[in-house]
Amino acid sequence: MDSRTPGIDALRLTPAQVRELHLGLDQLRRADYVREQRDNERFVYRTADAITVKIEQPGGGTSTYLVQPRDLSSSGLGFLHGGFIHPGSACSLILKDAEGHDLLITGTIARCRMIRGRVHEVGIAFDERIELGQFDVQAINTQEPEVEALRSTLWADRSQRTELTASVGRMAESVRHIAAALRAERLDQAARHCEAIRATAMGSGYPTLAEVAG
Image 1 (tube, rainbow, N blue to C red):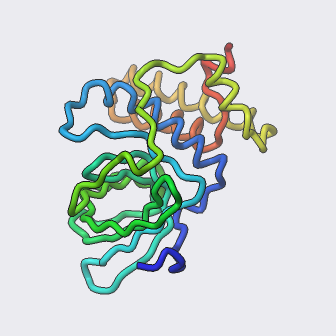
Image 2 (image 1 turned 120 degrees about the vertical axis):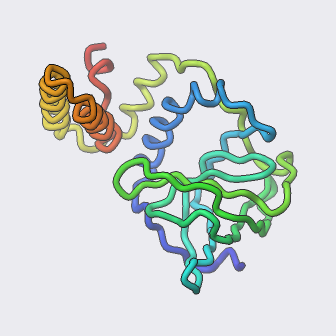
C-alpha cells in the first residue's frame, strides 16, 4: 500500500478536538490501564499526521481511511475513526518508524466500539509482532494528572468560549433530569443523562463543572 494513497478522514475533527478527545479517553482509561493484565504492554502512540489504514470490506472491495492512532503494542494498534468497522475485517496500514521510514503492516480488526456520535475506537491485531523500539512511543501514565496542568491544557485550544454558557446550561438541565430519574428509580434514564453531561463537556471542549468551580 502506497503511503500516498488518498484516504478518507471520516473523523472530520480539528487537531484541537482530537487532542481533547484523547485527553478525555486517557482519563477514563487510566484505571483500566492499571487493572488490565496484558501479555503485550501498550504504549501511547500519537503522530502529528493521521495514519493510513486500508480495510477489506466484508461485502467486497476496500476502503482507505486516515485515522488517529492512540496506542501501540508489539501485537496491535488502537486508533480513533469516524465510523464502524466490522471486527474480523482484514486490514493493512502504514506506520512510520522513528527515522521516518514507511513500514507496511497487516492485521485484522479485533474490536470496534462507539465512543460518541460517529467517533469509534478501533483495535487492530497484527499478523506478525513488531519491534516497538523502532517507533516513538511513550509509557502510559497511570498517575492522576496535575490539576493545574490539566486545566491549562483544556483551555489552551478553546476557540468558541462564547458557547460556554449554553453548554453549562445543557449540563445543568441534564442534572435536573438525573435527579428526577433517580426519584423515579429509573437508573437507565439517569445513566443516559450522565452520559449526556460527559459528551457535552468532551464534545464542546469546555471544562467540566468541577473545573469551573475551581
